[in-house]
Amino acid sequence: MRFFRERRVEVSFVDVARKPIAAGELRRFTARFGAAALMYTDSPRYRDAGLAYLSMDEEGAFDRLLCDQSLLRLPLVRAGAQLSVGVDEGAWRSLLAEAS
Image 1 (spheres, rainbow, N blue to C red):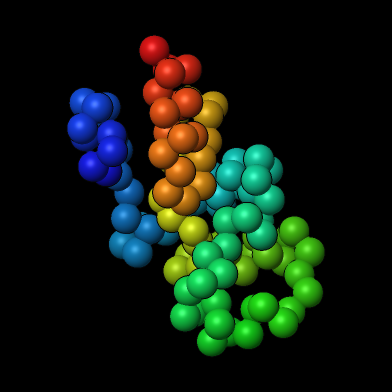
Image 2: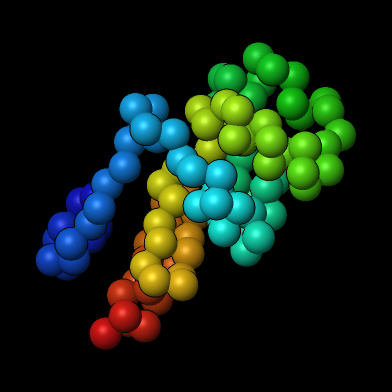
């Protein structure tokens, strides 16, 4: 939020803990990056569920993310058709440059 606020970019913030991400929106990110790239593998929830030892296909990983959104690597940033996952200031700068 701070990165965008410092650049005077209006942000629509959605707290996925209060309002879960829609399946269509999650599908948009998984189509671009793959479900595995959206999983926050350092989270306690990921370790406690033993997901590091499971073999999941894309659809299985998508279903797991949809059911347990605490596994998402946040923030998920969308600017029009451009997307980024996680804290990635380089990608955010690119999003802003393309939007200008």
